[in-house]
Amino acid sequence: VRRIVARALSLFARVVTGKWDKRFIEIEVTTLMELNAFVHRMRTLHPWIEKGVRGGGPNGERTANIFALDQRTDIREKIPKEFLRNLPCDLRVSLGWDTDMTDIDLHVIEPSGEEAYYSNRRTHIGGQVSRDFVSGYGPEEYMIKSAIGGKYLIKVTAACIA
Image (cartoon, rainbow, N blue to C red; front, side):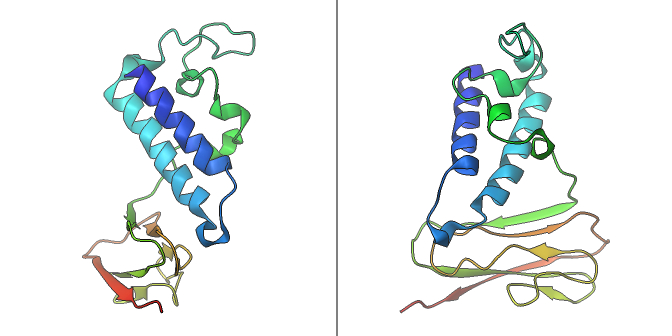
């Protein structure tokens, strides 16, 4: 499990710190959310995973830090520590697709009736939609830190790209 987690952390770091085509601007934001959720889940499912990890401390001593699992790619050296924490979020919807040069749009209708989508990226109750990916693989996301009670309707539309 440690080897798999170390590989996943390495891939997350590559996406977050890599240079990407302008079609993928802001991919690092989604990836950071995924990275932090992944780390939180691994710590919950496998509480033993950080025990005795060599290199966790400044002098290579054993400390409990999941980010030191991969000695070649210690994420803490590449990503500011302020970004390496699971961010509180009551609701997060992530929409990705596997066809390039495609425009798929995420719409979320909140319990208030307000619709969050690419032309209404911030709602009155605090919902946010990521930028509109119009010619790539996405993802598009909706997040709300403190969701109000009620039903959230998730809709997806596809636009034709010539």
